[in-house]
Image (cartoon, rainbow, N blue to C red; front, side, top):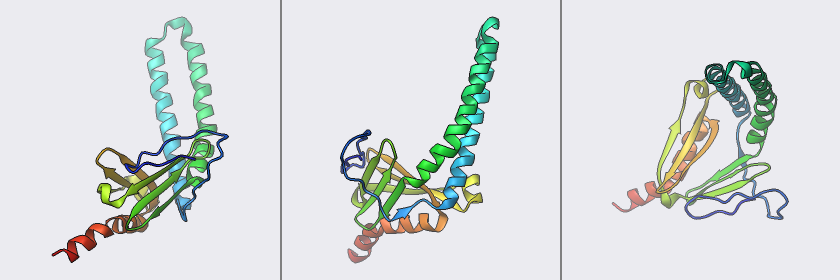
Amino acid sequence: MAGTQADGQGTWSGWGRAVPSHSYASTLPPAALHYLMIRSTFEVLVTGVVSCGLALWLVPSGWKSPTLIVMAILIIAGLIIDVPIVSRLTTRHTSYHVDADAVRISRGFFLSKDTVLSTAQILNISIIEGPLLRRFGLAKVRFTTLNHVEPLGPVERGVAVDIRRQALATYLEASTSGH
């Protein structure tokens, strides 16, 4: 498990370390798995098509067939490994907790990273929705500090708004009580 720093940049740790695991109460919703699987499929296929096009253009004639066969194998491996396995691990091993003092995000299975962002250091909180995210009723939350940007999600749209409201609660209290 990773250590954390006040600026939100956690450190990565590898396997076999005896460091306690942090799992927060809130996790990604089931719809996040479907979104991640569709996005991973699209990314693997687009990357594969572009790579095959470049191979046809750049690789000498005698090497085109073996190169395309290797690329086809890599695309199939990506579809078999990345789409069902990595997407599922990402969904299962991402948890978070947000309150008025800090945003805590834990990610990872083999390599894990815990990030703690003090709400006093957060400069901006963006809610990001693309067409595919909207289709599933999801949004991503992006926390920006002076030297770090930390994404969270996808989470349900209403939850994203609540996360933003909770993280900004410190500023709202200070601005209403100070005037």
